[in-house]
Image (cartoon, rainbow, N blue to C red; front, side, top):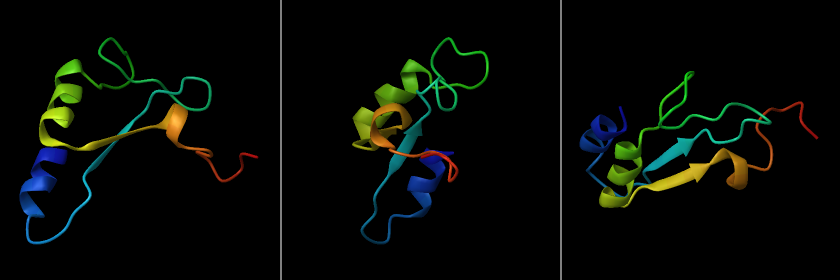
Length: 69
């Protein structure tokens, strides 16, 4: 999906990000071996190749849900 979005949005400045669900305590952790979602190693390699920003929920988000303190 993100690659398709990049192809559609090339007419001006853009910030391409990918949310990495890597916080099993507050939400879910998706990874190459996850049974609930997927964030394969190939996708991480593609983000580096294309210069996308990967935002990790565990370290980059102070709050995930509005009810959190």
